[in-house]
Image (cartoon, rainbow, N blue to C red; front, top):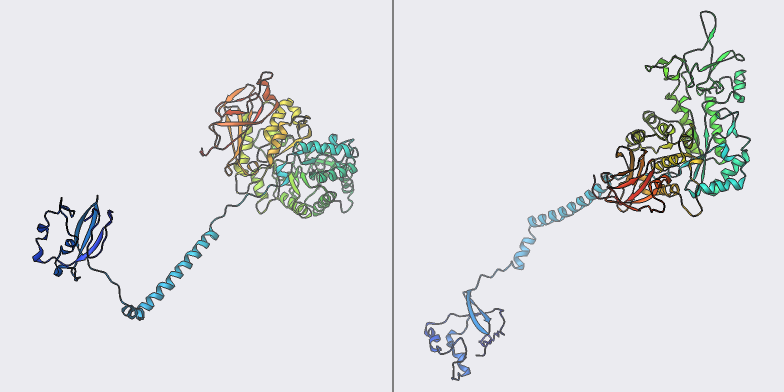
Length: 630
């Protein structure tokens, strides 16, 4: 036999592989039990040395009776070839497993029990499948949705710049166009016309439908037209609480001409013990002393919560409310995009003219602070009047008109105003900025901004506030050096709200240089500014810091720092949420450069643990928010 080959009657061939080959044989008879001994000279199924074996001998290894005859108890013989040698392994053959026959299967297939069972499983499968499908749909439909942020309006994106009579006098169409272009280059698209109504002096209006002759109505119409062409908006500021004493309405009311008799608040005097005429109650003017002034023409007192030459209009009279609706409509028809109203907290007074209660604060009896003004200020009826006016503005502008107040408004009053639906756009609480001087501290800034953040901005009824740096007070640049004023202005630009500035708060852009103001104002259109988180804190005891971050990954965060101290500092910003190890310089106020030597470059990348900041300066940084939520 050749190595690796075994030739049996079964013609099985093993080719030197380890693959087993099985064959079934009949048991060897006793007569042939010594066949191995007869072949003892054969080693390992190979040829004996120097001896030729007849090929037919291989077929005589088993007797004819011992040839294979399959039986039910046959064993399995497994041939395994290893390294050219063949080995035999004999194992009993296991029982063979066979399935049911067709007839037997059909017997069960037609059995009513198995038919019902099959239908039960079939129907149950599809019911379960549909239940899972409906459950998945229900989860998707009923799961709470992430409410997308409301898109910001035009008055929320751009700063608002007040234009006063001196900014508009002696201007023709060309100069007005240039003015608007300069503002647009600084990314300002909203202007507010302040104190332009026809008056004997500011706040003493004689006609709510006309403008100061020094400005001219035609120029105002040109300004409105040019602004529309440049995709800019024009607002008008009106103080509806009072008119000037020279207004035609007052003259007619004083003479009891209808329908103007009750256009103002009139009251008969109280007669003193000596027969003298006295004011009808103890109400005081904001300037101090009695809020009532005697009119010998009418023989009654008229109310003035401000100067005696500014008589209060009577908004308990629906005719007066309607009169101002006509005034608003007049200006909207000319193209005005909205209004900022002043002194509206004084609109409605107690018609019963009850005395005010004395305040607990130590003040002289004729000072405004000596009384608690519950009958003349912040009355809930004010909201009813404002609601009528707002609906008119909203309807006539197809919900694109601004209806805002110039007055500071407390968060609790705002909650009452906006209880059912929004009443006031751009509510403000900016008195801390209106009275700010160069000594304003980081704590004063935090205390002024933080309540608004806590009670309004982060509430479910969040409102986008206005940050008025001037109001009717002395202009910012008149209260401090231009450098510090510009630094505070820059600080306000990325607050979550709309800064209200005067024209001289805007830096003049140089021909070849973009101002820091323009750089930051442009970022007000970024999603992170419009909808990002707002975080404030004080660093190093003197640096007011706030950040805008927290939206989807990939958007940069902003950090604004204002150094209120007179001394330079190196501050650690790494402990502020989301601020990474490195930050980038985006912009800075001009006085930030005072700590640099001539020709020394500003580093554009800083380690957040060591950020230098100059006295009274503002630094604006950008950063990639860290993944760690501190």
